[in-house]
Image (cartoon, rainbow, N blue to C red; front, side):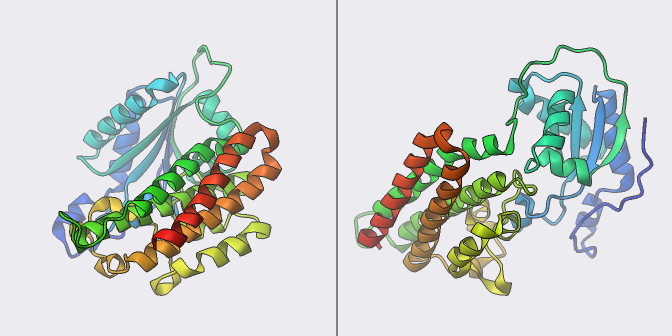
Length: 333
Protein backbone atom coordinates (compact mmCIF):
# COMPACT_ATOMS: atom_id res chain seq x y z
CA UNK A 1 0.00 0.00 0.00
CA UNK A 2 1.54 3.31 -1.04
CA UNK A 3 0.92 6.77 0.37
CA UNK A 4 0.77 9.97 -1.66
CA UNK A 5 3.52 12.32 -0.53
CA UNK A 6 2.53 15.86 0.31
CA UNK A 7 5.54 16.77 2.43
CA UNK A 8 8.31 19.02 1.12
CA UNK A 9 11.86 17.68 1.03
CA UNK A 10 14.15 19.49 3.48
CA UNK A 11 17.34 21.29 2.48
CA UNK A 12 19.50 24.18 3.55
CA UNK A 13 21.18 24.59 0.17
CA UNK A 14 22.13 27.79 -1.58
CA UNK A 15 19.97 27.49 -4.68
CA UNK A 16 22.33 29.68 -6.72
CA UNK A 17 24.77 26.77 -6.94
CA UNK A 18 23.64 24.58 -9.89
CA UNK A 19 25.58 21.52 -8.69
CA UNK A 20 23.90 21.69 -5.29
CA UNK A 21 20.50 22.26 -6.88
CA UNK A 22 20.96 19.01 -8.81
CA UNK A 23 21.72 17.25 -5.52
CA UNK A 24 18.51 18.38 -3.79
CA UNK A 25 16.24 15.37 -3.28
CA UNK A 26 12.83 15.75 -4.88
CA UNK A 27 9.56 14.11 -3.92
CA UNK A 28 9.94 11.95 -7.03
CA UNK A 29 13.30 10.77 -5.65
CA UNK A 30 11.67 9.87 -2.36
CA UNK A 31 8.88 7.95 -4.11
CA UNK A 32 11.32 6.12 -6.37
CA UNK A 33 13.47 5.14 -3.43
CA UNK A 34 10.49 3.88 -1.44
CA UNK A 35 9.36 1.72 -4.36
CA UNK A 36 12.86 0.31 -4.83
CA UNK A 37 13.11 -0.50 -1.12
CA UNK A 38 9.73 -2.22 -1.21
CA UNK A 39 10.78 -4.24 -4.26
CA UNK A 40 13.94 -5.24 -2.38
CA UNK A 41 11.93 -6.85 0.41
CA UNK A 42 10.90 -4.09 2.81
CA UNK A 43 7.67 -4.92 4.61
CA UNK A 44 7.24 -1.23 5.49
CA UNK A 45 9.04 1.91 4.32
CA UNK A 46 8.85 5.13 6.35
CA UNK A 47 10.27 8.50 5.33
CA UNK A 48 11.38 10.82 8.12
CA UNK A 49 12.75 14.39 8.26
CA UNK A 50 16.25 15.28 9.45
CA UNK A 51 16.73 14.56 13.16
CA UNK A 52 16.75 17.74 15.29
CA UNK A 53 20.20 17.97 16.83
CA UNK A 54 21.43 15.06 14.73
CA UNK A 55 24.98 14.60 13.49
CA UNK A 56 24.49 16.32 10.14
CA UNK A 57 23.65 19.55 11.95
CA UNK A 58 27.36 19.75 12.86
CA UNK A 59 28.81 18.91 9.43
CA UNK A 60 29.97 22.22 7.92
CA UNK A 61 30.03 20.62 4.47
CA UNK A 62 26.51 19.26 4.70
CA UNK A 63 24.66 21.55 2.31
CA UNK A 64 22.10 18.81 1.61
CA UNK A 65 20.52 16.90 4.47
CA UNK A 66 19.96 13.18 3.82
CA UNK A 67 16.74 11.48 2.78
CA UNK A 68 15.99 9.38 5.83
CA UNK A 69 14.17 6.05 5.65
CA UNK A 70 13.18 3.40 8.14
CA UNK A 71 12.95 -0.01 6.50
CA UNK A 72 10.98 -2.60 8.47
CA UNK A 73 11.49 -6.19 7.40
CA UNK A 74 9.62 -9.26 8.54
CA UNK A 75 12.62 -10.88 10.18
CA UNK A 76 16.10 -9.49 10.82
CA UNK A 77 19.25 -11.28 11.92
CA UNK A 78 20.49 -8.52 14.21
CA UNK A 79 24.17 -9.27 13.69
CA UNK A 80 23.61 -8.50 10.00
CA UNK A 81 21.84 -5.16 10.53
CA UNK A 82 24.79 -3.09 9.30
CA UNK A 83 25.02 -5.03 6.02
CA UNK A 84 21.26 -4.84 5.45
CA UNK A 85 21.37 -1.08 6.01
CA UNK A 86 24.30 -0.73 3.63
CA UNK A 87 22.56 -2.76 0.93
CA UNK A 88 19.21 -0.98 1.27
CA UNK A 89 20.95 2.43 1.22
CA UNK A 90 22.78 1.48 -1.99
CA UNK A 91 19.47 0.48 -3.61
CA UNK A 92 17.85 3.76 -2.56
CA UNK A 93 20.79 5.81 -3.86
CA UNK A 94 20.53 4.19 -7.27
CA UNK A 95 16.78 4.87 -7.34
CA UNK A 96 17.35 8.55 -6.53
CA UNK A 97 20.19 9.12 -8.96
CA UNK A 98 22.87 8.95 -6.24
CA UNK A 99 21.23 11.34 -3.79
CA UNK A 100 22.27 11.42 -0.12
CA UNK A 101 20.32 8.61 1.57
CA UNK A 102 20.38 7.07 5.06
CA UNK A 103 18.51 3.91 6.01
CA UNK A 104 17.76 2.39 9.40
CA UNK A 105 16.71 -1.27 9.27
CA UNK A 106 14.63 -3.00 11.91
CA UNK A 107 12.08 -5.79 12.01
CA UNK A 108 8.42 -5.99 12.92
CA UNK A 109 8.94 -7.15 16.50
CA UNK A 110 11.75 -4.73 17.35
CA UNK A 111 9.94 -1.80 15.73
CA UNK A 112 6.67 -2.56 17.50
CA UNK A 113 8.37 -2.66 20.89
CA UNK A 114 10.87 0.21 20.65
CA UNK A 115 8.54 2.62 18.84
CA UNK A 116 5.94 2.21 21.57
CA UNK A 117 7.84 1.31 24.75
CA UNK A 118 11.30 2.93 24.50
CA UNK A 119 10.37 6.60 24.55
CA UNK A 120 13.96 7.84 24.18
CA UNK A 121 14.72 5.70 21.12
CA UNK A 122 15.10 6.74 17.51
CA UNK A 123 12.24 4.37 16.67
CA UNK A 124 9.82 6.20 18.97
CA UNK A 125 10.81 9.53 17.42
CA UNK A 126 10.51 8.15 13.89
CA UNK A 127 7.09 6.65 14.58
CA UNK A 128 5.78 10.14 15.40
CA UNK A 129 7.62 12.02 12.66
CA UNK A 130 7.48 9.77 9.59
CA UNK A 131 5.23 9.20 6.62
CA UNK A 132 4.56 5.57 5.72
CA UNK A 133 5.17 5.18 1.98
CA UNK A 134 4.80 1.42 1.71
CA UNK A 135 3.20 -1.33 3.75
CA UNK A 136 2.56 -4.96 2.86
CA UNK A 137 0.96 -7.81 4.74
CA UNK A 138 3.43 -9.43 7.15
CA UNK A 139 4.43 -13.02 6.60
CA UNK A 140 4.76 -15.70 9.25
CA UNK A 141 8.33 -15.63 10.52
CA UNK A 142 10.25 -16.96 13.48
CA UNK A 143 10.93 -14.09 15.87
CA UNK A 144 13.56 -14.33 18.62
CA UNK A 145 12.55 -13.97 22.25
CA UNK A 146 14.71 -10.84 22.55
CA UNK A 147 15.00 -7.88 20.21
CA UNK A 148 18.35 -6.66 18.90
CA UNK A 149 18.43 -3.35 20.74
CA UNK A 150 17.67 -2.20 24.26
CA UNK A 151 14.28 -3.25 25.63
CA UNK A 152 13.85 -0.25 27.95
CA UNK A 153 15.15 3.31 28.18
CA UNK A 154 16.91 2.40 31.43
CA UNK A 155 18.75 -0.36 29.59
CA UNK A 156 19.88 2.21 27.02
CA UNK A 157 21.30 4.29 29.89
CA UNK A 158 23.06 1.33 31.46
CA UNK A 159 24.69 0.34 28.17
CA UNK A 160 26.22 3.83 27.83
CA UNK A 161 28.02 3.71 31.19
CA UNK A 162 31.11 1.77 29.92
CA UNK A 163 31.39 4.19 26.97
CA UNK A 164 31.25 7.13 29.37
CA UNK A 165 34.00 5.60 31.50
CA UNK A 166 36.19 5.09 28.43
CA UNK A 167 35.68 8.66 27.22
CA UNK A 168 36.80 9.97 30.63
CA UNK A 169 39.85 7.70 30.59
CA UNK A 170 40.93 8.87 27.13
CA UNK A 171 40.34 12.53 28.03
CA UNK A 172 42.55 12.18 31.13
CA UNK A 173 45.33 10.39 29.23
CA UNK A 174 45.36 13.00 26.47
CA UNK A 175 45.75 15.74 29.08
CA UNK A 176 48.35 13.77 31.02
CA UNK A 177 50.51 13.24 27.92
CA UNK A 178 50.22 16.71 26.37
CA UNK A 179 53.62 17.38 24.76
CA UNK A 180 55.59 20.33 26.06
CA UNK A 181 56.48 22.87 23.42
CA UNK A 182 60.20 22.60 22.80
CA UNK A 183 60.38 18.83 23.13
CA UNK A 184 62.16 17.22 20.15
CA UNK A 185 59.66 16.68 17.34
CA UNK A 186 56.96 18.77 19.00
CA UNK A 187 55.76 22.26 18.26
CA UNK A 188 52.61 24.27 18.91
CA UNK A 189 50.68 22.44 16.20
CA UNK A 190 51.33 19.06 17.83
CA UNK A 191 50.14 20.27 21.23
CA UNK A 192 47.13 21.97 19.59
CA UNK A 193 46.13 18.75 17.79
CA UNK A 194 46.27 16.75 21.03
CA UNK A 195 44.34 19.48 22.85
CA UNK A 196 41.68 19.26 20.14
CA UNK A 197 41.50 15.49 20.62
CA UNK A 198 41.12 16.05 24.36
CA UNK A 199 38.28 18.53 23.83
CA UNK A 200 36.57 16.09 21.47
CA UNK A 201 36.80 13.24 24.00
CA UNK A 202 35.54 15.52 26.77
CA UNK A 203 32.57 16.37 24.56
CA UNK A 204 31.99 12.67 23.99
CA UNK A 205 31.76 12.28 27.76
CA UNK A 206 29.40 15.26 28.04
CA UNK A 207 27.14 13.87 25.30
CA UNK A 208 27.07 10.42 26.90
CA UNK A 209 26.37 11.85 30.35
CA UNK A 210 23.49 13.93 29.02
CA UNK A 211 22.15 10.93 27.13
CA UNK A 212 22.22 8.79 30.27
CA UNK A 213 20.24 11.49 32.08
CA UNK A 214 17.86 11.68 29.11
CA UNK A 215 17.31 7.93 28.88
CA UNK A 216 16.67 7.72 32.61
CA UNK A 217 14.11 10.54 32.38
CA UNK A 218 12.20 8.62 29.66
CA UNK A 219 10.74 11.87 28.31
CA UNK A 220 11.78 12.16 24.68
CA UNK A 221 14.17 11.24 21.86
CA UNK A 222 17.80 10.89 22.93
CA UNK A 223 19.38 8.11 20.89
CA UNK A 224 20.46 9.93 17.72
CA UNK A 225 20.73 13.44 19.19
CA UNK A 226 24.17 15.07 19.51
CA UNK A 227 23.24 18.68 20.27
CA UNK A 228 23.73 19.51 23.95
CA UNK A 229 20.87 22.02 23.96
CA UNK A 230 18.47 19.44 22.51
CA UNK A 231 19.57 16.88 25.10
CA UNK A 232 19.08 19.37 27.93
CA UNK A 233 15.47 19.72 26.84
CA UNK A 234 14.66 16.09 27.72
CA UNK A 235 16.38 16.05 31.11
CA UNK A 236 14.12 16.49 34.16
CA UNK A 237 14.23 19.83 35.96
CA UNK A 238 15.91 18.25 38.99
CA UNK A 239 19.04 17.76 36.86
CA UNK A 240 18.67 20.12 33.88
CA UNK A 241 19.26 23.30 35.89
CA UNK A 242 22.55 22.02 37.31
CA UNK A 243 23.57 20.57 33.92
CA UNK A 244 22.97 23.93 32.25
CA UNK A 245 25.08 25.70 34.87
CA UNK A 246 27.90 23.20 34.27
CA UNK A 247 27.78 23.84 30.53
CA UNK A 248 27.48 27.65 30.65
CA UNK A 249 31.27 28.16 30.12
CA UNK A 250 31.02 26.15 26.88
CA UNK A 251 28.35 28.31 25.28
CA UNK A 252 29.66 30.23 22.31
CA UNK A 253 28.47 32.58 19.59
CA UNK A 254 24.66 33.01 19.42
CA UNK A 255 24.47 31.26 22.81
CA UNK A 256 24.99 27.87 21.15
CA UNK A 257 27.06 24.83 21.99
CA UNK A 258 29.68 23.19 19.80
CA UNK A 259 29.90 19.40 19.96
CA UNK A 260 33.57 18.92 19.18
CA UNK A 261 33.20 15.14 19.17
CA UNK A 262 31.29 15.55 15.90
CA UNK A 263 32.83 18.72 14.50
CA UNK A 264 36.49 17.73 14.91
CA UNK A 265 36.02 14.56 12.86
CA UNK A 266 35.72 16.60 9.66
CA UNK A 267 39.25 18.08 9.74
CA UNK A 268 40.09 21.76 10.12
CA UNK A 269 41.20 22.18 6.50
CA UNK A 270 37.64 21.45 5.42
CA UNK A 271 35.91 23.58 8.03
CA UNK A 272 34.13 26.84 7.58
CA UNK A 273 34.29 27.37 11.33
CA UNK A 274 37.89 28.48 11.79
CA UNK A 275 36.91 30.90 14.55
CA UNK A 276 35.73 27.95 16.61
CA UNK A 277 39.00 26.11 16.06
CA UNK A 278 40.88 29.17 17.26
CA UNK A 279 39.21 28.59 20.64
CA UNK A 280 41.22 25.44 21.30
CA UNK A 281 43.93 26.05 23.89
CA UNK A 282 44.81 24.86 27.38
CA UNK A 283 42.14 26.99 29.02
CA UNK A 284 39.42 25.75 26.68
CA UNK A 285 40.53 22.15 27.17
CA UNK A 286 40.29 22.66 30.94
CA UNK A 287 36.76 24.07 30.64
CA UNK A 288 35.57 21.11 28.55
CA UNK A 289 37.27 18.46 30.68
CA UNK A 290 35.87 20.01 33.87
CA UNK A 291 32.38 20.01 32.38
CA UNK A 292 32.84 16.37 31.29
CA UNK A 293 33.76 15.30 34.82
CA UNK A 294 30.87 17.22 36.39
CA UNK A 295 28.23 16.06 33.89
CA UNK A 296 29.46 12.48 34.39
CA UNK A 297 29.04 12.74 38.16
CA UNK A 298 25.56 14.18 37.64
CA UNK A 299 24.69 11.23 35.41
CA UNK A 300 25.96 8.73 37.97
CA UNK A 301 23.82 10.36 40.66
CA UNK A 302 20.70 9.70 38.59
CA UNK A 303 21.91 6.24 37.55
CA UNK A 304 22.64 5.30 41.14
CA UNK A 305 19.08 6.13 42.13
CA UNK A 306 17.37 4.42 39.19
CA UNK A 307 19.60 1.53 38.15
CA UNK A 308 20.56 0.61 41.71
CA UNK A 309 22.58 -2.60 42.13
CA UNK A 310 22.24 -3.69 38.48
CA UNK A 311 24.92 -1.22 37.40
CA UNK A 312 26.72 -0.55 40.69
CA UNK A 313 30.21 -1.48 39.48
CA UNK A 314 29.83 0.45 36.23
CA UNK A 315 28.62 3.53 38.11
CA UNK A 316 31.53 3.31 40.54
CA UNK A 317 34.00 3.11 37.65
CA UNK A 318 32.56 6.27 36.05
CA UNK A 319 32.73 8.12 39.39
CA UNK A 320 36.34 7.02 39.87
CA UNK A 321 37.38 8.18 36.39
CA UNK A 322 35.55 11.50 36.74
CA UNK A 323 37.37 12.21 40.02
CA UNK A 324 40.70 11.13 38.48
CA UNK A 325 40.10 13.56 35.62
CA UNK A 326 39.47 16.38 38.08
CA UNK A 327 42.73 15.56 39.85
CA UNK A 328 44.65 15.44 36.57
CA UNK A 329 43.41 18.90 35.64
CA UNK A 330 44.90 20.30 38.85
CA UNK A 331 48.36 18.97 38.05
CA UNK A 332 48.60 19.18 34.25
CA UNK A 333 46.93 22.39 33.08
